[in-house]
Length: 416
Image (cartoon, rainbow, N blue to C red; front, side, top):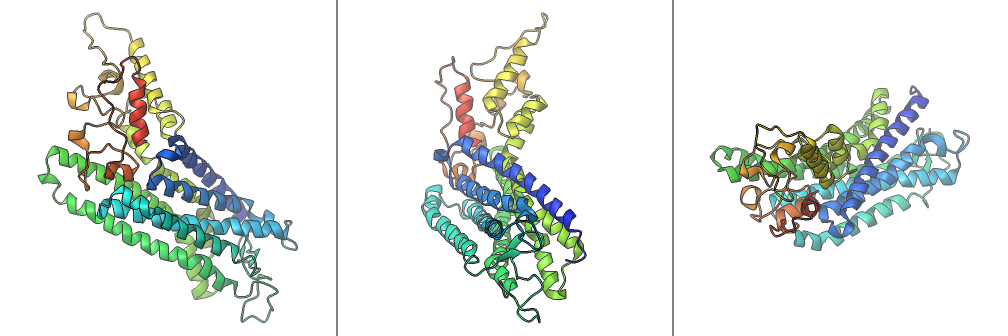
């Protein structure tokens, strides 16, 4: 890395880490807003994956400040802490694979949610124990040292290796430990994720061939399946984009003995960005709702809704207020608003009866309940509840008309 401009590399790392932390905080807020008691397998995987990435991004943001003398102005204990923080990111890698497995079990094998939840403790125990071992083991082995850009598993001094004439004071054969503790699990998870998602995509491919023969209700089921697989693809894309350049970097280093300069710049920029990339998958269902059910809402409210600042009930109130404040045309009759619902004018609906119940993501059971498990469900980014009948029940038609927002809140709780 002698040809690298180290201040530029370290600045790229800090900037990426800040954006990743921003994405992590939004995801964690969105999860906590739903409430841990209402989490399914999907939300628990996302929460702990994000928490793991938040810790790793904190380590990346420290950058060279932790490097001890003579190469930096930090101290060894901070260097060890930074290396351990970055190694905790292995948990996010393992949970990415677990997320793809969850999609596979729900979409492809149609496993019920309660059965998957019964297996959860074993999966999380494996992830936590494996990550703990790979994070703590380098400490007694004296492996956390100056890795040029930050502290991680490295030789001391940096130019020593097992076959070099320079004797290693600590961290001998650090490259092998990097493989065992990080890169081998990473590459296994990448391959595993690709296999799982290829099998999941086959569900859409098989149904896509028969879509023209489907009745309208079956087409809506198919569209819901496609949206969920798009969300899964966003998570997989985030995972691959984060680690593709660091993988190329390791291959170059192994083959040529010298990592490429531009590949290094790309690697140190993308590795800390996973939190920001994951945010795209997490907010995808709300983005769809903002573009369809709330398409006539002000842009400001759409943005606040997508990023969990306001709830759907707040958007509903604002749109209803605007519709009521609009001056009436004396020559035209105005249809009254039903209690607890938005007028078609305020939401940009078609006016058809079939659309009355779908402004904020709620759809009638006979038109958009779907799919592989043949359960009656309501559209949700929480695929475990959507596919397995564990969703919140639909709003009752006997709701007190004096409190229309409670119906919307109940809908939102079940799906967003």
